[in-house]
Image (tube, rainbow, N blue to C red; front, side, top):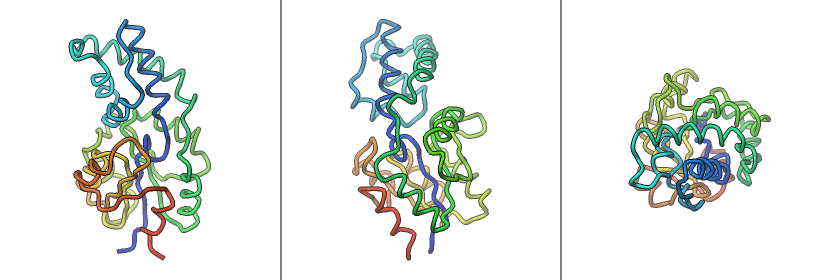
Length: 218
């Protein structure tokens, strides 16, 4: 089947957000008198929404609801100050988006980042490309791996799920794509491993953004 559309994850797939997220959470932890986490640990903390991020960053003996809620407030405040410090598209992403646009591939973004931040980040850092839908976590778009957001995008595009590629860097992304009937492609430049991607349903792995183009055929 010829693929007509692409739905992409955001953090760890289109944009390298790791340093700003890690710095924000570490600053929030410091405000509560709690120890910071190494930046590589955040590769496994990110991807399931902000509450899961806060829970994973906390010491195991401080994961009560009151502390999680307090940390969440501070993460929001710190990320508001930092989200543009280091975040940028991965190498090769601008060229990929240019190529797909020239070929008439329809594009959308589905993230577990809060919807307001998802829109702001895409508007500021990916302004040169047209995405038909940019969805983040909200009351109407539950967190992945719930496939509702992906299914909504495909339905609104008026295409069959099998006509759409989904790219992402985590097992959650591969689960989402599989549940929605999309073709799951794992990217290896993001936050997680090939083993995680394959064990959660990836049907293809790509080492660099340009490797996605041939999946759309000639």
